[in-house]
Length: 348
Ligand SMILES: Cc1ncc(COP(=O)(O)O)c(C=O)c1O
Image 1 (cartoon, rainbow, N blue to C red):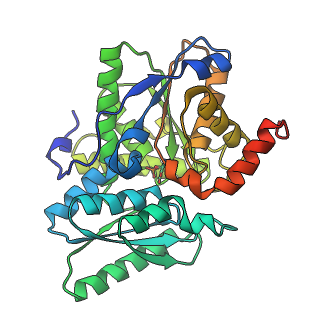
Image 2 (image 1 turned 90 degrees about the vertical axis):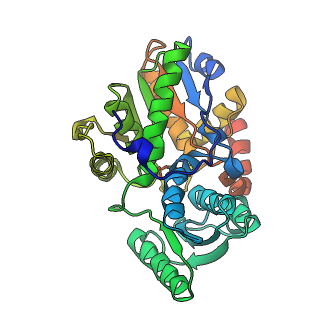
């Protein structure tokens, strides 16, 4: 049913399967009698884990099958993908070059030294800077230039791609996660009507949606926009789903009108917190001891809370905790101030 999925080159990096836990304290705080769950993909293990570990099992599987000896990747300064790639390269005995893009305006100090950047350094990655802001294609072009320079020096580089149009290997990690989730909810007797997940590059969202539909599940998948507005992201996910079908050589399982994207919690933009996301981060920590990050999971939790409030306990909702925890430390000053203000009642 999942075509060539199990024949694709893959390496083992993650601690899988990750647990599913009930969020009963949060459900009670929201006035629901339950029906709220979290898929703990923050617990995938590799160097603080997160969703990118599942994706890298396929990218680095391809890298190894090509005989690569150095991995290159580009991402935001506080990218979790970059940190996980650096960690995966270490595990496979490869070098890693990372390019950090200045996507988030107005940041300095701890944003450039703490959190994921500190981990990139600890993992021994060679760090390059891409000073332009949002420029996905330009950043990809530059990382390929660096790969060309390494090749000229006799190395065998592998670039983990990010911009649209590349083979959706990362999404396969979440096609597989859909299979894992369906198995777990079936054996655990858990009722799920809706999954809420961050939608950035879209690999997680598209992979999950595709995997569920290909396996005959009609669980709603709500993609929470963290980088682009809903209409643009919807097209991106629909395209990605078609590319997954091609890669796996199976029928397109996802109709375009089945792609749901929600951008209510995106403002003021990528990597910048808003009040609803701050409240969600605060509630997740205080009611469930779940540590969220300001860029991805706090906004996704804000959407989960909104959906949980709009629906009753019979509507089972699963929040995918995609990790990103180290990112919280890169925002420690602004987060501390914001949490103090929130808890003093200064944010309604
Ligand atoms: C913690 C975290 N959650 C969610 C996402 C979004 O995942 P995707 O890029 O697959 O849409 C990312 C992307 O970097 C991430 O780091």
